Image (cartoon, rainbow, N blue to C red; front, side, top):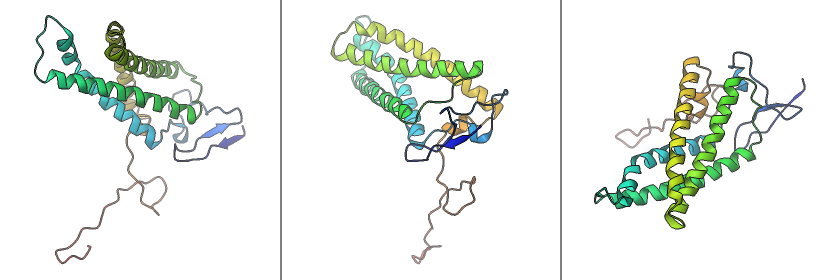
Length: 215
């Protein structure tokens, strides 16, 4: 089948696509060729792990929200600070998820899922996008517009925890298979200019000797 390659740019790396605009499907085992494995740009990787960190912050400050707004629980002195951290980290998640969605649309559509586990992964990923956006929106609404949105905010958080558990299980599955999928979402070191393609080496700054000369 004739194929064309999309150009690599600041938003991501190039990918091979057939003439219909679809990404090539993986083989029956699901691993596929190394060039067909999912690739994400540095911007996408950075956004992904930033959101992960902010979700952890949300989890750590959740109890402070409950104590601050409950008539039966006594808040701690630090709870007001954690309340502010929870609010602003939630707003940041909403902004970053909009950026991730815009970037995903900019890069074009993904390969159409063929196997059951690929379809299941697509459902979980889409669910996480929607749930995180809804969580940020409901939290903002509950804080600044309508307190009744807190009910939905709490239940959406429970949905997010379930989806995150499924997402982590999927990552463990790929780690066991060693198919390189998880590695594509890990931060990559910068390649040394002139080094053979496929090999990535860390760039080491020259150290200075006691006399001031670089060694």
